[in-house]
Each structure stands twice: as C-alpha cells, then as structure tokens.
Length: 340
Image (cartoon, one colour):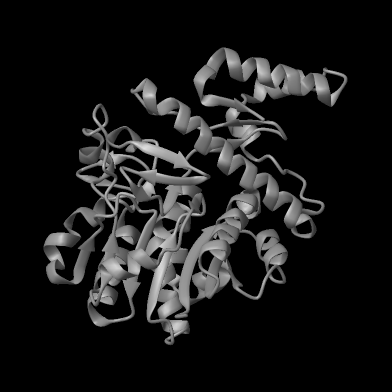
C-alpha cells in the first residue's frame, strides 16, 4: 500500500482533537505519516513518543526556517498567526523531506470515516486539490465573505506548479491574514478563490460530496446511517469537519447546528455523539499522553463567561458545578447542547 503523508497543527489544549484525527486515519489508512506542527512545547513533549507514525515539529523549527514568518508574529493575533502558517508548513516539509510526493494538509478537527484514497484518485496527476464550502441555502452569501473554498483539507504535489502556488499564498498571508473580511480577503482562506483560474489545469476542485461534510453544507444533502456506516446522497462519507465542536465535560458538549431543516437534526445529533464517543475513546486509549494535563477541557473557558466560572468557585462540589454548567448551556444554547 502506498504511504500517505499528512500534516496538521495544534497545541496541547487541542491535543485530544488532534489525536482523535490521528486515530481516525489509523483506522482508515494504516500506512501513513502525520506531521504535527506543535504550537506549544508541551504539545511537542506529549507527542514525541506517542506513535512512530506521528512526527511532531516544534514551532521554533518552522520559525527558524522561515524568519519572515517569525517577523510577522507581533503584528497579528495568535489566531491570525496560525492562519499565516498554512502555506509555510507544507513548503517547510517539502524542503525538509523531498521524498514526500503528495502532502495532505488537514485541520485537526476532522474525523475520517473511510479511506482518503478516493481523494487521491480524484486528484489524478494534477498538482493541487481543494474543496468548496458548498454552503447550503441561507448561508450562500458567506462565500463572498469567507471564501468559496474551505481551508480544511488540501492536497499538494511536490512539483513546480504546487510550490509556485504555495509560495504566492505564503507571500499573501505574510502581507495580510486578518481574521475578518477586508477588501475581498479573509484570513488565509479567500486567497484560494483565484486558484482555479490562475493555476487552471493544475487544480482539481473536489466533486466528492462525502469530503468535508460540515454543519454549513449538510442541508444540501440526505445524510443516512445504515449499520453504523454513514452516506451522503448514497455516497460514502469520507470525513466530517467538526468545526466549533466543544467538549465541556465528561458528559457535556456543544456542536453548533446550522441546519434549517428539521429532518436533518436527528442525523446531526447522531454524528455529534459519534465524534464525542471517539474523543472519549481517545482519552482512554492515550491516557499516558494526557496524564497530568492541567486543562483537559480547554473549550470550557471559551464557552462559559469568566464571570460565570468565577461564581462557580463558590459552589462546593464538582457535581454541583457540572449541574450549573448544564443548566446554563441548556438555557442559552438549547439544541446545540448534547449530553451523554
């Protein structure tokens, strides 16, 4: 079986999501290497002996190899700086590992249900593979603001056209990578809008509706489950983008439901529980990696207001604190809240 090469990035706060991505790949594609740009030293230390198929890279290594990237760190937010790294990481890996023929860049909150081989088959002998948002009705106007394409899964061939494209994208992101729509740009993402025209015969725009199934496009399709296998309009689901999925406790999580069709809400909830179960398996399976992790539920602070968390300090038991968090989530977020 041909070896596949993937790359992603995350810090120790999102370690559980990144490891769950890894395990989903391991179940669907056994022969692979996952390069992880570790955005914190703690993340690197926890990953360095995790699995031979995981190759962690310190952020300092990337910054040393790309001084211009490091120079822009102080003129943008942390989120914008991470966006800026998107084209820098594959160029770094191609330079360091010339044996990589195809490199697939992934967001850490993806989860694979079947082998990604169909994506490589669709790419064929071309150089670049990108996936549209495919916004459903009610959200189509977002393409003009957030971009036609979702920077969540791209494939780059180690050849001149792909590296030319990545080098231009890098220059654009170094110049501006704001986390807001501005002058026809948005973060690292909207720059991809011009790729099909500017790189024409070298670009494949995915037609696989099972790739990057996400809350913003589910209403376009009929998603079904048969004996634990998920399909979208009868085709296999390749991977789901669990964007904005937040673990808030052992039995409490949030995933924002964009659906405007009631018929899709049951399958949405089912897919949410599938991912939460996978996250819990990861925690048990990789207990050694997570041992002593101070903040295992990093999303809790982003979801509950600091004032609310400060008030919880006066609640005497963890069980009661959990109950208050549940009540808060149910009152303010309702259908987006899940229990298990």
